[in-house]
Every structure is written in structure tokens, then in C-alpha cells.
Length: 185
Image (cartoon, rainbow, N blue to C red; front, side, top):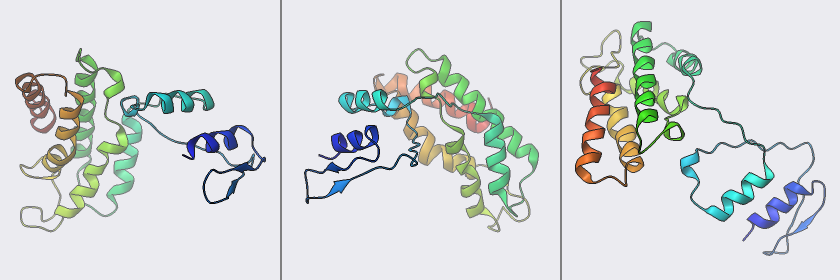
């Protein structure tokens, strides 16, 4: 009920807009900048999509290996992970996105963002100091951080992306991507 009025307030900065609920007024100052992110695959409400697209400037900012590396290194803190592990992870994330880009059913608009992949460091921190993870944390250890990221986040996302395929085709694609991402094959 408020989107239309909010859009009007954005378009007519410094003018009070009467809201349809509660007798409130909304005024957005000219020095307030709205920055948001949206994946193309998130566009599901057609009318809202058009309303957003009409009122904002759009820039494509896709997956970026340099940003991913910077994020992973800054999130690492005191966590002991070899740079080789981080580089291998970035290479596999890049290969996974290349695989997604090449699929007829998907394409570049379905690539997984660098912010999403950087969560592997947060997961790795949960493993630090546990049996089998004394000293340096290995991202690709069986049942380790990459497996967890794959199982709880990446696989379900890819399954949703491939929702139009029959179960056998979908499972085959997911298995192929997992082998490449988790095992490097």
C-alpha cells in the first residue's frame, strides 16, 4: 500500500506526500541517496519491477574475483588459511559461474555473486580449533567449509534456478557442478 507513495516521494524530493495509512506524511530530502541491489532473477513482481526500473539508474555489477579475494582476506582476520586455499576457492567459484553462464537454462544473469561466496570464511571460522582443524583450516576438507557452503546454500540455489528441468536433468546438473566446485573435477 505504500510503494506508490514512496516512489512519488523519491521522484518529488522535498515535497510532503500524504500516506494512505495512519495520517502520516513522507518527505525524502534531496541529499538522501538510495542504493540497492537486486539480481535479475529476483524480479518476480512485474509491475513493481517496471516501477523500480523507471525510477532508478541501473548498473550491472556481476561476480568479481578481485573483490571476492579482497573480501575473503579481510574477513579472514586471524584465521589460518593458506593463500593457496583461498586462490583455489576463488578459481572454483569462477569456474562454477562460468558453468552457470554456459548453461542454456541459465546464463550470466544467474551467476552467484562474490559476496555470497565470501561466506565460506564465516563458515570456516566455525571449524577453527575443532578436531581435524587444529592449526590451519582447510576449506576443501571433506565435510568442511566448502561442503557446508555447497550443501546449505549453493546446491539449493542452483536447484531453484533449474526448477523448470525434470528431476533427473536437474540432479545431473547439480551433481556435475558439485564435482567441479567441491572436488575440482
